[in-house]
Image (cartoon, rainbow, N blue to C red; front, side, top):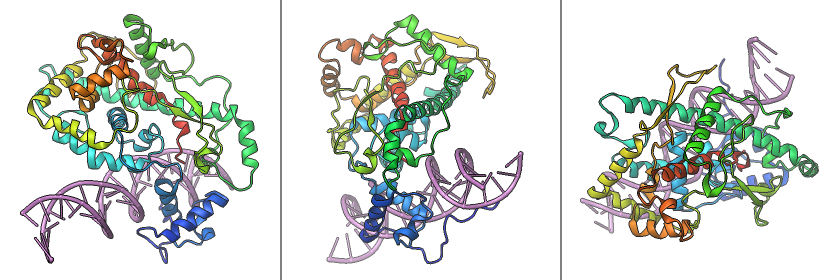
Length: 408
DNA sequence: AAGATCATCAACCGCGTTGGC
DNA sequence: GGCCAACGCGGTTGATGATCT
């Protein structure tokens, strides 16, 4: 079918928004909510197409947007999630509260990607570009790379499924509150603006076999290596529900200062407890500091160190579990081979962002509360703990509820 | 000081998905 | 089930400011 133009191009303004236009859009949305974006420009008296209005609102005018430099913690989150999710900026953005997908995408393209490239890391695969480092004589590494890709796909699917569940259950549980809020005239809240969920079945949907395999792998790992998740939280078995073994998202009451559109209808925001980071990056660490750390990688010694670490971390062929998966919707027919500890890319972002020895050591004591620093930050011999922590980090990130995203 | 080049990021474009009819 | 409008996402562009020569 032919695609209809998003708006009538004739007579519509393009290009940068003027303060007057911003004011009009803001005033209209604050009073009426955005409603239908297509109809908004006319109602608001703007010579713009609805798409342009939506973009302006979501990327710039929305009151719950944090602007300015990215913190080290945010950088780390982006890199980790990009390694897992690829260019799924909106998915990444759901884990960075107050940042828009556009902003993250721009930041990746203009900063992080370049840094990785400079370091000889392929920003797409997050692996060293040197073929010798990637490929092994038996070709196992490329297989692993493929598996990694599949795992990312699965995890993405799982993330989406779980996000839906969380969103739906949250909406159900707070339906009374929402009803009250929705009764207030006109204002479209982020929650209400998003597509209303269908009635939630009383039982969790049957998870995909591949997702069970994923969970199974995790449980197995937890059993063999220690049943504790991060922060001493026991890794729960998967059983029949979809609860993630690492879902430990905590919620706090929304800050009272939260701007109107974001706060109405949203009583809480997810707090991501960063494994190995919490406490060390207080959000105030600015990019300059990060730049310094990054610059360290221009140094060949450290670069080699990094590559070595990466190479080690990529060799997740050791201690492999073979997991034969019967997949209804299999992407491939080979048995999935996953390192028992999921130890790919372990230490990757740590090396990227915490390579400065003095910083990492001080960070470590911060993170570990000055206590068990060897285990906490990888004293060198605790590979298992490293791997577990790394996976906890990523899984915790992807498990944190995207349903709270201010995006709509 | 002026032009060239680079870096940044807001905004646009087009495609895929979703949901209502 | 098919059609279509609307939305959302990701890639790309272009304007602007900063830096270099």
